[in-house]
Amino acid sequence: MGERLKDKVALVTGGAQGIGRAIAGIFAAEGAVVGVLDIRAEEAEKAAQSIRDAGGRAHSYAGDVSQRETFSTAVDALEKLYGRFDILVNNAIWVRYNSIDAITEKTLLRMVGTGFNSVVWGIQVAAPAMTRSGGGSIINIASAAGFLGIPSAMVYCGVKAGVLGLTRSASVDLGGSKIRVNAIAPGSVVTEGVTINVDEAMRAKRIARTPMGRLGGVEDISAAALFLASDDSTFITGESLLVDGGVTHAFS
Image (cartoon, rainbow, N blue to C red; front, side):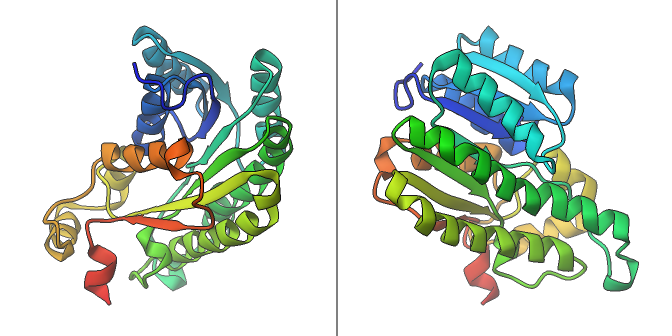
């Protein structure tokens, strides 16, 4: 167990699997109390229990992150338990790739609600609690897709570009309260969600396009999140950190 986040209180959305679970795990290993928030209550509790089994401190919360009340419930509970709230990771996303003519209202609303609206509500709810704690760190998980035009991904690219804009603006508004707001923009990362949307041919193409010659792992992203959550980055805000193996520059 480390101490880079000793006694900090954090909430990670989409924390039951993939990138979110890895971030929750590394935060707990570095001394933070972690709230694991996911729409699936049973899976959120499994993730929290795995942290407790490893000697960390974690609580599970379930809810739809497109709704403000979900954040209020989790942040209020953590603040009441520990008297502070320090770190928010807006990681939750729901993704489907479609050609423009195949986009449905249901898909659009769910992708925007989960991937964009949730970031707005998370920032809005977290900021007052962090202010009461003397400051904090908000980390939004964006994507290299926010910088690129990817075929059959208009909504996804738009949502992630929007997250980058939210990050820059919120950093300006919240800097006076000692709240840092940054984004991590991963390239292709091997997760359960990517497996749903990417077949083997597309996977091979993504590897070939990446200068580092591999796809990312969840540990690559969680290490970046730890840096932005910790005191190692106290003068960094409004930044979008590409963790993509160089793929964004290879496209340009």
